Image (cartoon, rainbow, N blue to C red; front, side, top):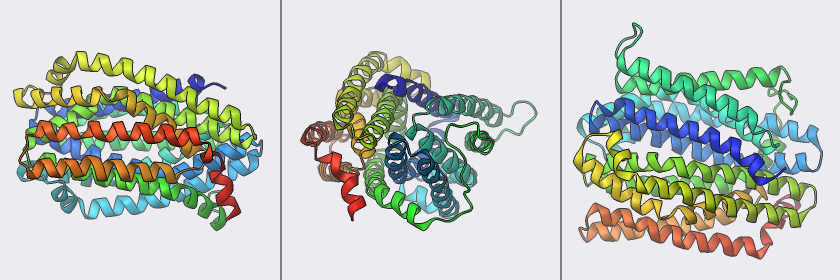
Length: 439
């Protein structure tokens, strides 16, 4: 099983997710910058939840892949079930907190006026669906750990088609439904979460998946603890990353709704390149974990480097295309000259970093697949908080233009790329899970 074989279904799946996110912004784009700010904020909170859950699930990926590679499929199946237990619990707690504290959360993002009202409505509408979202994410991550990337592809296509359909219907009031506006975008996404989770659960309970069902009603503290211990550094990494990004967004929000909307639109447009990196991150994590489980360290190293090379080629190609068509893409999203101008500048800056982002995604995934979740945590802490956010604050205090604030991400990714390559070259990451088991 090669890197590309595992990567392409995940890339297609993530491209559909990116299309759905773009559609959410486009659908509400006609309602103005405040509506776009609300959609961007709602997606940012969803991304934060996804990132934290994905961090915890790094432990599942490492342990399931390691057992699957060692041909202990029963143990892999048990870890599969414990993963679902853990992620449903975390998603439920998150949903309750986000619903209850929606308005303070939006205020924390620095939004005011109509943008504050619409963002709060969006979060309160989508929060109840986060349990289904977490369940689906857990099942998809566990499936990818055993090398099943086609089932998540099918589910992802179905989910995103329904998401776009329901967003169009509910935002615009088609087919006899009320015109919900921004809330309709939240509800449309939420319904798609439920559809995806239900389909995956039905497949799992009916033994249609390669990994067999093991009761989720049996509480197994030791295995849940093992998942959590391996995944905790990755979860902390994502918390730090999201704190850093949120701090960066807050600084951008001080420059006005146009700058905030430009950041959100720019990230969404470039997500078509970024999700390719996620695909290679998944492939690298799965292959490295399975090869280490099979005691084939050389093949594990080759899988990591192979994922990096393919990721760099793919993300660079798509990054160039997006940069070349930055202005028409931005204009398609919103007809506001200032937002378009800032979006284009942001795309030029982040687009030029695609090769370095490719290194972060691919080698970061490979390290997590080996159980080395502490290194990505340390790198993220160093680069995001102590380089990007620190520089952004300095420039903000010097009253620099928002374009200068955007440029701080360049230094972040240059240092990250160097650190990830240095760590993977050292080979010390291969013993990370052995050390945890010994402890």
